[in-house]
Image (cartoon, rainbow, N blue to C red; front, side):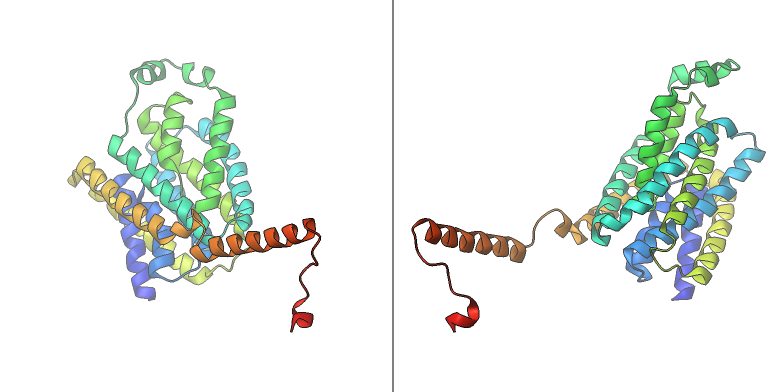
Length: 296
């Protein structure tokens, strides 16, 4: 089982390195359906994996000059608050509800991967002028976006890069290449905040998660080296199709979250009928039903 887990960690890291994001969304399903962890444990450990691998990726982007530290700190600090809040709110959700929400996030990620990453012309124009990028940052929108994405991360354990990158491009006026590197630092910050929020709520398999993360980082390094030899757009579309299939299957597996079971519906109906009879009996002046012991 350990060997299988490490092999899957390499697969996650490889997809992260090749695709530049999205691979981490496989972590929770692998932990739950292949390695047998509880949903809440899987989400907490996923945050540790995503945060650490994203931090290593952000470091390489920073060395290449593709990271805006100021924007990352503004967005990241707000997202950290949202992620910690999401992790604390997780106690009010069942594991099935979290997995169903996770499935919806997978479908949303697939949509963004089908669309591809586009940089609006006005962003390219604005980013050429020094200083203009910082002056036009709408802090209110960035705060709202950061908290919303952070809460989502805390609840379902995904990095949310497919939501962060468009926000940085459109709201932060950051060029696409820089937005990708900056988003990795944001993901790392809020993932660590979310993981901290889960401590004390679930048990963490520390030894396993350290080994899993280390192998995922090695896979990311290998994937980054291979990225120039693989048609990334075609691979991205194929991965999006896989996310649609996986997300649909997860929704089916946890479909009970959205509808009452037949037993619950029948029980609610029976209770309402019994109460109706009691109410009618009292209104008509009849005697209330005897307790069960007296009736026997």
